[in-house]
Length: 489
Image (cartoon, rainbow, N blue to C red; front, top):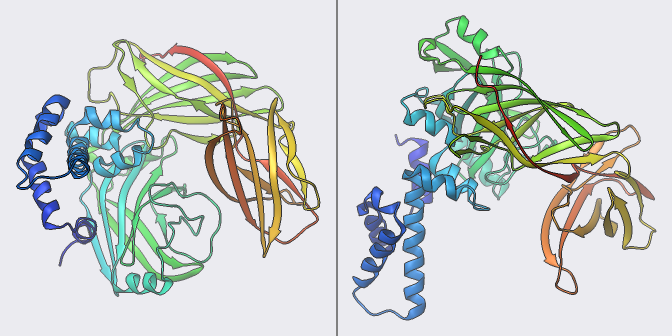
């Protein structure tokens, strides 16, 4: 029987005879050649010149473009240098991760630190394949594909591609991390990490059609959690999995065992820090630097001025004394609490010669203010309605209720000073209901400035007015600080 990965590959790689010829050409290109743009261009020109019949300029351009794209894909797959640059291009990070996998894990594998053997489990018409399994002191990560006739039947019944969900939560498009909004009408997976007390994990949707669901799953460990597990000298990692259709459980894999060799485990190195950074409205304390086989992380905490909160760092990265840059991975940062967070960086220096100096750098922080964050919208008001938040003008252009859905649109100047991820409805009990947010940027009427526009939709009953608040506001506090980290234990 073919593996699910083989089925998946066939599904996405059915190509015409012409495309097969181009694919064969790409396979014949030497990997070392791809790294050099001039040689790549020469090979493209040589390939085009071998075409048997003349082509018009438009077709020439299309053929050359197609060849370049194919060569670019191959170069991402085999060249860490090109992949690192491509990942910085807006929209390409997800493509790079899909082609190369997690960059931190791939770097560890290239240094001989292997993962866990994949497994396939088949039960009652359900097929589960878990691959790309990797364990270190920081996390357990793997790819999972759920397929089989029972899955295909349920997906076909829905008549459309189902969203990805975690624990029955909000759907996500391919390449997006699943969030926490409850959705009760989707086919989804729910994992149980039996060897660990902390049940939290994240899932990212990668590909779905009428035959299968595919995700990346990552469970981050609490401090000391992985070490305590290793101390027991386990030979397996125990998982449970429920396949659920909305609230209904349709199948359960109770005892999934991943073969595990505790003797191959490589512990992380932790460097305690005593570094403080003072900026407007906050003080940032760098608590520790952890270097694991797959990535590096900084644990930081904040002492915010009363009435303010931190929502993110602007371009956080590490830099060594030679100018090498270590960028954020797929997870830029994870908020552990309102006053502490963890930032992640790849690739790890774990297998390389330790840098003599390592600096934590960022272009600024983004903060929010409680003052002005909340406001009231009435369906009877005249719009646009002007609001002022942290000195920036925000225009509510529409607030309307239609057939069970509240639609709110707003816009503001997009000069990178303020970012808003949408709106929340604040209920009388203090609970929040998140809506859908779509962003577009367009010039203003004079064509001189860019305007950020957003639309939020909420499934909510009709009211005379709604208590609202801005979701994850981020006002930029610029900085050009480079803080040297302690590299001695």
